[in-house]
Image 1 (cartoon, rainbow, N blue to C red):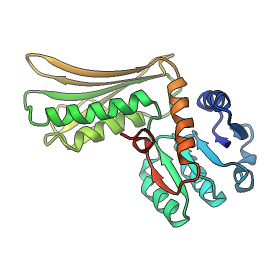
Image 2 (cartoon, rainbow, N blue to C red; image 1 turned 120 degrees about the horizontal axis):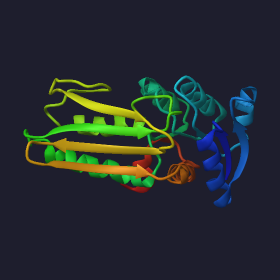
Image 3 (cartoon, rainbow, N blue to C red; image 1 turned 120 degrees about the vertical axis):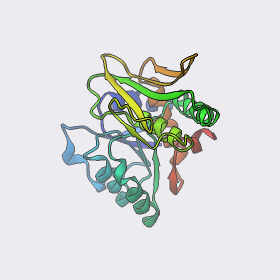
Image 4 (cartoon, rainbow, N blue to C red; image 1 turned 180 degrees about the vertical axis):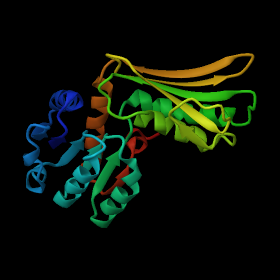
Length: 238
């Protein structure tokens, strides 16, 4: 499979290593040093694109892949206010899009555990729930896309929480997401339910970027030859 890497930072390098190990070929690498090569013509040489850039460029990069007729896997965060528009564009152009806030297999299993725990705790009025995420200082957005996914899963079933906020709040209807930036943390996410009698918490701790990179390549392998809009739950059969 021929892969275009749109975004060739630390994640891009990690994805390249895994992709080559799995016998794929990298035909395009786009970084801040060669943005002029990020063209429809160049992207069209690939079988699938993997896009890890930033909030300001992700949407345009994804649409450029649709224009090139190339399925795109995106792990960029901070742009999801335009996700529905991207999904509509994908379907309108008979393209393929797979977005995930986190490609780690472990994190996606953690998502399923979080949903189940949230359902179990939804009627437990003695517990207050908070979400905490810790990443390296180079991470541009806060809260992380993974933390937002976790919070939205809780909000979907918890009748007492109405919105997530990225600051401290005394309002019971606010779901706090606490963001910390500490080097060299790849990513740690915690959900904590607290009462006067006890605490319940679930934690996922990434030790390196390998899990994210492998998941992204598995997503690309899944997306190759498909049309439509997908997520990691489709890749993993969750």
